[in-house]
Image 1 (cartoon, rainbow, N blue to C red):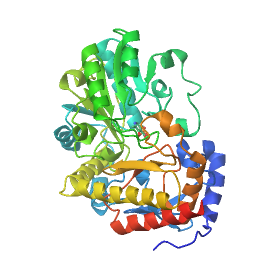
Image 2 (tube, protein in one colour):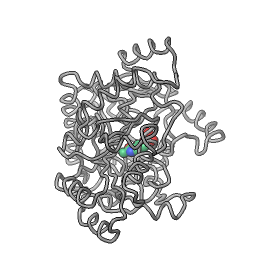
Image 3 (cartoon, rainbow, N blue to C red):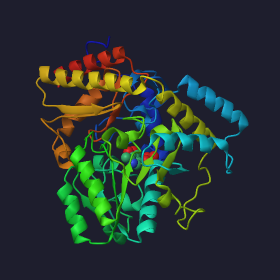
Length: 435
Ligand code: PLP
C-alpha cells in the first residue's frame, strides 16, 4: 500500500539535471507542459519506464497516468513491442523508400476507422493536423477554418488561436510569431454549442473550408461531447459543403478500436491520428475518403512530404500496438480500470469535503476541482487550479505521476492493474485529507 503519510521526495538528481537543462534548452524542456510551471515545483526527470510505472533520476517509482501523453496504451516498454523493434533495427532504421510495413499499418487503420479509406503517415500529430487543413482548403478552394476554444491541434500557426494544452496551461491565449492573416482565417466556436458553429457558418457563407475538433476534449482537461453536438456538426458541415475533421490524435484507438467516431457513431470526412498509432515512436497520420485523399501528392496536387514518414521502426511499433489492442478484452480492461479509478477519486473527494467532478471513456479520464459538470472550456477555466497544483505535488510524493496541469486528460494502459488503481485511490484520499 502507499505510505500513509506524505514523505518529502528525494529529487536531488532531477533538480541537478533540470538546472543544467535550463542552460541548454528553452525552459529546460523540449515541450512546454513538461516544465511543471502550472503546478509549481520542479519537473521529475525520468530515467526509465516499464508497464504502468516510471522511475525518476533519483530512482523514485511512480504509477504513471500520463503514459508519454497517450502513446503508452499497452504499457511502457512492452515486451512484444520491444521484440518487434529489436528485429526491425537489424533490418535498418530508416529507408526513405516504400516498405511493406506501411501497407500493413495502413490496412489496420483503414479496417478500423470508419472514415478512413486511404491514409498518409507523417511524424507527429501537429503534422497530421496542419496537413489536413491544407487538404480541406485544397479540396474546397476556401480558406477559413473553424476550431473550438480550448481544443489543441498541435503548434502549427493556424491552430494557435485560443488553443488548449500548454497554450492554455501557460496562459498564452495566442502566440507571437503567428501572422495576423493566418490567425484571422481561424474562427473559433464554443464546444458543445452547435449554435455558435451555425452562427459562424452564417456570417461566413461559402468561405469555410472545414471544421476541426477533438471529438472528446483532452486538452482543456477531459470534456466529453454530447452526441447531439457531434451530429449537429456532421449535419452543418454536409449542408455547407465544409470538410469535417475529427482530430483523433488523442482519442484514436484509445477510447475504442475504431476511435471516437466508432464510439459515437458519427463519421467525419477526414481524421487525424498520432500518439497510440506510433506505439511510442514519432508517428502521425491523416486519412479520409479516397476522393479527398487522392488530392495528396503525388496522387494529386496538394503537396505534403517527409524524409522520415513511414519510418520502418515507427510502423513496427504501431503495428504491434494495434495488434495487442485488437485482442479480446483490451478495451474492456481499459474501461474497467479507468472507471474504478475515477469513481474512487470522486468518492475520496466527497468523503474529504472537496468539490470535484470528473469522468472517463475507456482509457481516457479527467477530473476538475469544481462542482461541475464541465462541458466547455469556460466551465473548465472556473475550476480551482491552485488546489490542483497542491494535489499534484501531494500525489507525486505518494508515488503517483499525474499530468502536471489541470487542463490535460489522464491515461491508463493495459498494464494498469486493479491493485495500481486501488493504491492510487488510497494516495488520493491521503492527499485530499491534507488539503
Ligand atoms: N491533436 C491533439 C488532439 C493532441 O492532443 C495533440 C498533442 O497532444 C496534437 C494534435 C499534436 O500532436 P503532437 O504533439 O504529436 O504534434
